[in-house]
Amino acid sequence: MTEIETEVVIAGAGPTGTTLAYELALAGVGTVVLEKQSRRVEQVKGGAIQPRTAELLESRGLLEPLLSRAVAREPVGGHFAGLPVPLDCTPWHTRHPYPITVPQSTVEEVLEGQAVARGARVVHGAAVTAVEQDDDGVSVTAGDLRVRARFLVACDGGHSTVRKLLGAAFPGRPGTFVGALADVRLSAVSSLVPRKIGHMSDLTREANGYWAMLVPVGGDRYRLTYGQVEQTQARRDAPVTEEEIATALRAVYGEETVLDGVTSSSRFTDATRQVERYREGRVLFAGDAAHIHPPYGGQGLNTGMQDAFNLGWKLAVTLQGRAPDGLLDTYHAERHPVGARVLHHTSAQRVLFHPRPDGDVAALRDIFSDLLRLPDTNRHLAGLMSGLSLSYDLPGEHPLVGRRVPDISLDYGQRWLSALFRAGHAVLLDLAGIVPDDVRLPGWIDLVRAHGAEDLGAAALLIRPDGYVCWAADDADACRGTLAEAVATHLAPRPEDLPVRPG
Image (cartoon, rainbow, N blue to C red; front, side, top):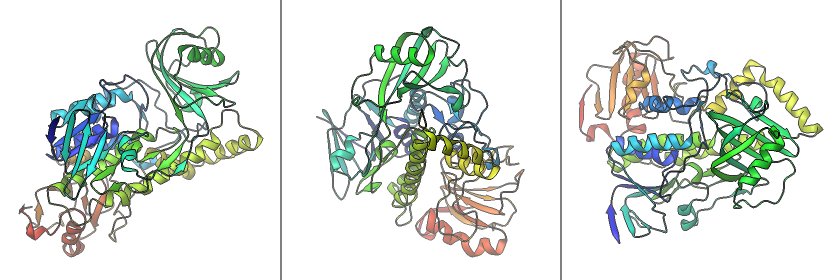
């Protein structure tokens, strides 16, 4: 038995696990990732990076290497339930208003590489078989490897082994249908096969008892999602055969569409479940290990990665003894409602998304499409699906508290605001010279005095490492009266008891 000691062990090297590993490694936290697969599965699954996730990746300098490997697509907004009205994110003031198509395997490869470069260790072919926790930490067994850590984070997917070993409650609704996803090569295509990635409504078809969505991802490669309109009793774990895929392709796209090969395939359902608690002692849950839902609107990968951005800095400062009391528990308090909201709206989309809607559902789709053409409705759902409207219920009187900060241009070294977060620190942004010169801050809060090209709605803002405002002030009096309290509430225990530096 090989034994390893570390600070955090992560189960699962998917997008959630690798994002979290990067965040922890960036903060100097010893991190080991255990991945049951011996090698990365080359699949397109989960290939849509939503605008808010893109902003978070931009803030760490991780977006550019993903953009360089993104699949070309039309500059068109996302969708709600596949309705034929693009969602417009431009009212949310973002530099990334459109979804970005990047294969999940590429996301994993890039983030794992960046995490390892920062000091994280990723062990492939290490399936978790046992978990034991006590007051001081957790012991995880994976074959002949035993890892002792202070915390374990389960990022091991919808069938989470960690969740099952702990017996963590995972209430919800079982799946009502089974669909399939396959990465395929086509040797010939009919005129019905899309030539480019456009809006979801243009990529989805129904014919001859099947519904399908075929997305071109380069050359002769496509991502195929399909199912039967009248559901059969196909098992969730039944293998996806080439014959089955070829049959679905011919049914929807014609006899001229010829399957040349299958790179990967899997099945999925519309099961909807969420763990009751995102923290069980020394074990935390993130991504699909914490929540599963119908695969509508590119929500799964993004919700999981945003779980990781919320948890990473909180876990790091907790381990390093520089967190206010209860900070780690705010992970559940903030992210559980987010997951519940995703489950809620994907369930609504499930009804609207029916491949062959009957009269009532067809009428509902028509009315909902009309509503989506109204700017206020479109803005609301665009913010919901993209993550740009997310705000947290944080203590503080200023209306900006809890909200995301748009990425604006600063005169601070001619940089975007997002560049201030490369180190994963919190930022005290003084836009009007109201922060006192003698302010004393912990070393993990960077004071930046700058002028912005646009008005953010406050003279000074204290911004968490994940880009959400935890304090704001409009004048010097408000700054002097509430800044120290805000630091102690959101970011540090008692600043006077910690190593500090002049501002």
